[in-house]
Image (cartoon, rainbow, N blue to C red; front, top):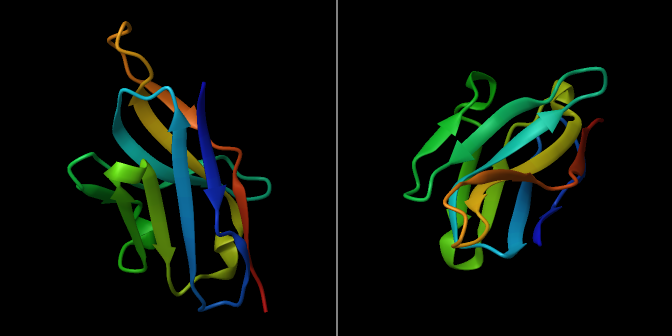
Length: 122
């Protein structure tokens, strides 16, 4: 009953910018971490950035200084502002949320969106 929906992907030139959004909906008691991962063709899925409920962010080294992750707790939404995009960052970007789905279960689970395509090309 939990759904994550990404949006904002598309085609951008090298050096350009995109802003991704991901909204979580459904049976949600509370959300711990939210984050973004990506998977390029022929590569494994890798962490891009995560953000905790208090706003503390963690970034992969290869995006530090260029990407900014943020969240709106009231909307259960996480954003990823991507600047100075590189060709090698072409990938499907996936939203992830670590959340508690119901009050009767005292555990947090990871949920995934279906991904949004980001293509960096001139």
